[in-house]
Each structure stands twice: as structure tokens, then as C-alpha cells.
Image (tube, rainbow, N blue to C red; front, side):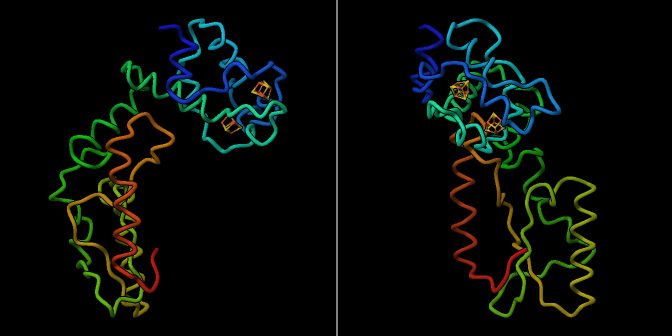
Amino acid sequence: MEVVDMIVENGGQALDDCYQCGTCSSVCPWGDFRDFRLRNLIRLAQFGIEGYECEDLWNCTTCGMCLERCPRGVKTIDIVRSIRNIMGEAGTLPPLLQSALSGLAGNGNPWAGDPDKRTAWASEVGLRTHTEESEILLYTCCTHAYDPRNIKAQRTLARLLEKAGVKWAAWATRKSVAAIPRTRVAAPTCTSRCATRTPNRFAASRPRRSW
Ligand code: SF4
Ligand code: SF4
């Protein structure tokens, strides 16, 4: 299958609408810092020339600035997502992202941390489980649970709340509560599972406030 067809099939139908004015690259916040030009990547993709599926593409945060300003109404973010999907299917994701997605698929979190140790961060402060009395439900994401520096920050926050007499709580669960937004990566299945579960669980917990 031709590159253009693959991109269209993966959701980048607008590829042919681009007439290479360069507005997208001029408004992109990355323009001042990195050699990342969406216009160039779209051109390579239009011609099916190698290079459109480069690591630079992962710099795009899908902020939408280019989408707003494109005079042709090209759905730029759809093109970015489409190429990312193609890269995901071809197994050519950046190593760091690949490792995060493998962790997510295998252990349910991008750090590949042991689910049984998800609440270990609270061992020194004592985990408060959520009840109707809780004033604040702490949003303990995978990074708080497994990254050593963030574990310290989460413990400090819990201690501060404790000292302030605030009734805080956190979920005592093995399951992850967040995910890399699925629209930004190429692993719809595992990330969409988490992305759906998290807001549902928040809604079900009915916290007075959540942090
Ligand atoms: S602004 Fe739109 S038409 Fe212009 S180069 Fe970018 S995508 Fe193409
Ligand atoms: S959506 Fe991506 S390419 Fe477009 S302006 Fe934002 S970062 Fe740049």
C-alpha cells in the first residue's frame, strides 16, 4: 500500500489538502526551540518519501495551533495521529515511549511497576482510604506511585495535609488511575481502557475535592 493511502486509512484524510503554505510551522510553539516543521513532514508524506515517520513527529503536543490557523482547514492533528498509528503498527516508536507502552500493557502502568506495590508510597505516612468523610481525594497517578522523586513529593503532600488537619484519602488499589492520553500515542487499546476507567472511578468515588 502507498504511504498516502496508509495515512488516509489511518485517519489522515486531509493529507492532500495541504498546499504547503507553511503557516502551521510558523505558528507551532516548537518553532523557536526545535527543528520540527510539520509542513516538511506533510510534504514528505504526500510524496511518500522516507522521513515523514521520524522521531520528531512525537514532539507535536497536539496543541491545535496549526489546526486553528491553517488556511486550507487541513486536519493537521489527524495526520499526526495517523502517522503515529502507522509507526506504532510498524513497531518504530521512540524507545522511551515503547518502554512506557510495554509497561502499560504488561503491568498496567508506564513505569512497569509491580501493581502490588502501587500504594507502597504511603507506607511511611499511612494510607487513608476514601470515605464520605474525606475532604480531599489525592490523585495518585502511576508517576506518584513508582517514580522515586515523585513518591517523595506525594509523601510530603500527605504529611502536610496531615499536619493541617485535612482529612485526605487516596485510592488503595492495584489498578492504575491514569494513562498517556490515547490520542497522543499509538496504542489505542491499553490506553483507552485506562482513559475510560479513570473518570468513571472518580465519578463513582464522589470526592468533595480531588488533587
Ligand atoms: S498551514 Fe495547512 S496548508 Fe499550510 S502547510 Fe500547514 S497544513 Fe499545509
Ligand atoms: S498541534 Fe503539533 S504541529 Fe500543530 S502547532 Fe501544536 S505542536 Fe505544532
